[in-house]
Image 1 (tube, rainbow, N blue to C red):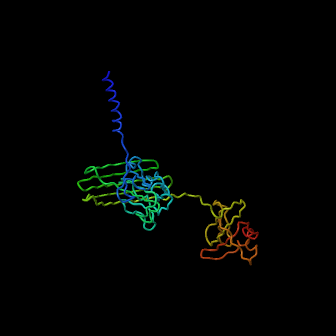
Image 2: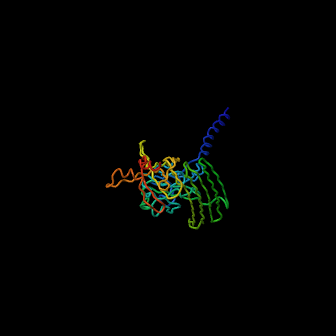
Image 3: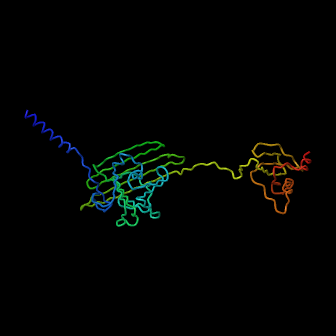
Length: 345
């Protein structure tokens, strides 16, 4: 009986010890953006968020701006679907007051003062460090709102490693990515090529992005290293256009709007006339050996001169002016005068 009690007591003491050994402790990440020296985030008196490279593999972020949307205090503004112009603001600051770095190198436009996040591919990203708050002491006036530092991944784990990814989604979205990395002695390398395309949600809203990324480095003595970083991104996007139905300027809401026609007299040719809706009407007549052709037009009549009377505009169908191709007159669709009717008979 005494032996059974000893074994039960020993097992009860061993179970908590095994559970404690299996428990994993999470440590604060080490950042370098705030002090430019590797420092644990708990020792820095600033608001810091870190997006790890594992998050890119877990959530499959197609762009960098999608990875930053869940960071508190950060606002992403994108003018459309994937691939369109994207900007970042931190704590209400303007886009040109946020410093964006890639491996410590500025990527902001020297003319506009801000960065387009659509030009940064998510390939070979190890982590993204975001500091909220002014960092003008280290990064100048461009860091009033905060700093975003994108750190790329080095090659490690063996002389050669390769991976290929293929993703598909709605709106005819296709993402392809190939990565090669490795390390040998003091050298390390990482290469990546990707393609992303999507037709978007609207007509002519497509996106076609091709990117190349490379990082080649060497480990030097005295805790130093030499790295060469190359990034290329080509983004072809469409501009969606909403088609609207154009309304002619001559359209009137009144049902009794006047209709105007213009008459053209030629010395030779067949006799034709047409109504305002384009359907053939009764054939015209020839007066003095000349053929008459009428056609409807939406243009308003010419204003009569102040010196002319109102009867002159009504009888203008009988006047004509010679030209290179004949005579042209403009008149209303009023019935012809009795004199013209007598001439046709």
